[in-house]
Amino acid sequence: MSKKPEFTDRLLSLGLARVSEAAAIESAKLIGGGDEKAADQVAVNAMREQLNLLDIQGTVVIGEGERDEAPMLFIGEEVGSGKGPEVDIALDPLEGTTLTAKDMPNALTVISMAPRGTMLHAPDVYMDKLAIGPGFDEGVVTLDMTPTQRVEALAKAKGCKPSDLMLCVLERERHDEMIKELRATGARIRLITDGDVAAVMHCAEPDLTGIDMYMGSGGAPEGVLAASALKCMGGQIQGRLLFRNDDERGRAERAGITDFNRIYTRDDMVRADVIFAATGVTNGSLVSGARDNGRYIETETLLMRSKTQSVRRIHYRQKI
Image (cartoon, rainbow, N blue to C red; front, side, top):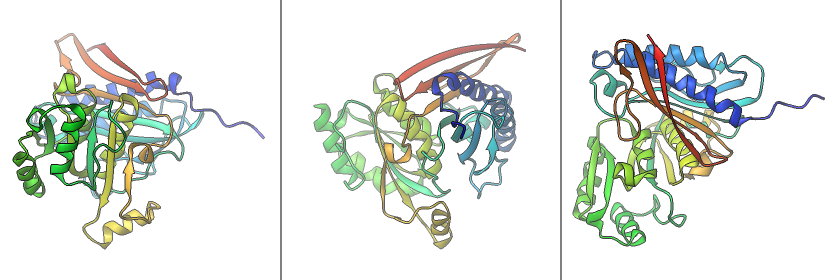
């Protein structure tokens, strides 16, 4: 009986960076063009083309959701050359389609990879999320706490006042009451319009980004991508699936989820070593956006491996 190829994360990581870079380069050509679907389409096409050059037997477990009308790298799609290790792939070809279309900060191309069967197959529903950076005891803040209790607990752990904390929240009507409660604690809030994978990643580098904690509901697939990033960068994330109707509960059941109230930790969402790449499309706090100087296109990519907790910043230049 032949031995299955191993998940050689060190060898595959550079290939993953190329996948992310290619998607960023193509979508960057449409920055400010006002066409979200077109920007997403070129990112999808570039990402799929590069993935199929990798010697992997890949299955997309986190892709563009089945409810989207946008072009898809769909859940269950098989990618890669068909040779090499069997892997799970989580991706968002363009995290921040609106940000790209409107030339707003923090649009990224995002992808992660882990051994087959080790990523949560999160259905396309909402997830209540809570994230902080590294250096804290496990469970210092939890989803079972009220927003006020989370702020007080993190301030105590950091040895600071609530007013010294900067929180990050998606600006959505569903968060209005939570935002009101958080502001009553004295904590400051950075509201964002889109891009909660980047927002969670901001928690891992508070000295660089100024963000201490992220909370609120967003897409469950993005929660798995964010967990992949924090598994490499350090930090904690908790997520609980939210269901608005029976159709969404049915999606969860088809994904093998039976406990609808479970709180997932980072290591529940990504259960083995993972590699992660994110390339800037528009300028942001984590990475610079793609730049076209007329002769070259340049990108900046975060390439990370959880096995070694390594974080590389790759500056790539391609002649036009």
